[in-house]
Amino acid sequence: MRWDNLAENDPAPPGAGRAAALFDADAVVTRTFDTPEFRGVTFHEVRARSIVNRVPGASRMPFEWTVNPYRGCTHACVYCFARKTHSYLDLDTGLGFDSQIVVKVNAPELLRRHLSSGRWQGAHIAMGTNVDCYQRAEGRYRLMPGIIEALRDHANPFSILTKGTLILRDLELIRQASEVTRVGISVSVGFIDHDLWRTVEPGTPAPERRLDVVRTLAELGIDCGVLMAPVIPFLGDHPDQLRATVRAIAASGATSVTPLVLHLRPGAREWYMAWLAAHHPHLVRRYERLYAEGAYAPKWYQRRITRQVHELATEFGIGPAHRGAARRIPQRVEPEPAGPTQLTLL
Image 1 (tube, one colour):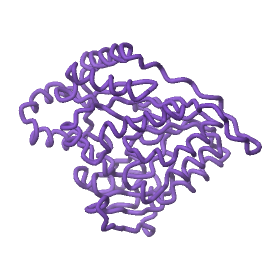
Image 2 (tube, one colour; image 1 turned 135 degrees about the vertical axis):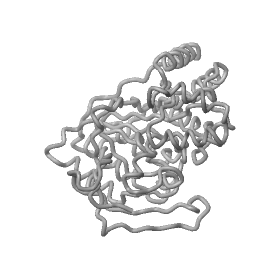
Image 3 (cartoon, rainbow, N blue to C red; image 1 turned 30 degrees about the horizontal axis):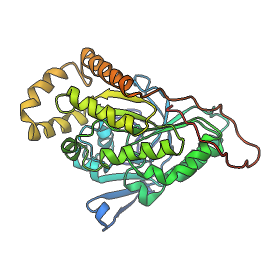
Image 4 (spheres, rainbow, N blue to C red; image 1 turned 90 degrees about the vertical axis):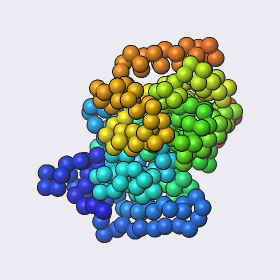
């Protein structure tokens, strides 16, 4: 495994002018736990040298900075675009991505130090956009409470995207942060078909459990949007499937729904196509044609899915998310508000 001379999202070969190493190689501790939820999973505990990452300029993401306390993900989604990042550590992007988890054990302290720097201007920080920060490992390592506390204490705006139900553990911290800065929560539910879920997202909570998270947040007066992602061509894109999914999202109390069609970047593409050949061989040629131009489905297909989902959202009464309060750092501890908390998606 290669730890030295590695920078975040840096695929350059050795000797090609890399940035400083991402981890301290002499501080890596490898552990396994003989418990049912972690059986077959190896954790590499590392002391990271940085935790706030700039999103590449060519990215389509609507944010510039991210925090990722983990690399690799036990959700084991066969389509996960982050699989390629495991190759930078000479780790397998297939089963290795699902079972070799890098844990940045010093993430909370690194983030607090970064936010305290005079150079940091308080930009929005997105979490859960690479691998899920509320995957099963978080139940043991508990990195997110310290991360949210640091963001709260510096009134730094942030958003969280997750497929995990563990986010409910940190609701009080999220509520506290929302009192001083803009906070966005979004849950990812691309479909509610159980047969599809069991094969493409085997390590995630069931779709209805994720929608229970949205429902719980709504009951507490906390806005939560749903990223309807991915919409999977020929397996999850039938009009009846889209209707059933949007209806369930609306019933959960989601404030918004945003569809995103499956994209297949290098690393994920190979793993997904191998899965497709094993489970749905009759679709391989159709996928090769649909994704012949690259990682993204054609614009006409994306527009069709977006239009259908937006029409269904209107039919079922899903409204836009509200904007949160302006960023402010309190000078003293204030009593808890009696009314509901309003959060924004981003």
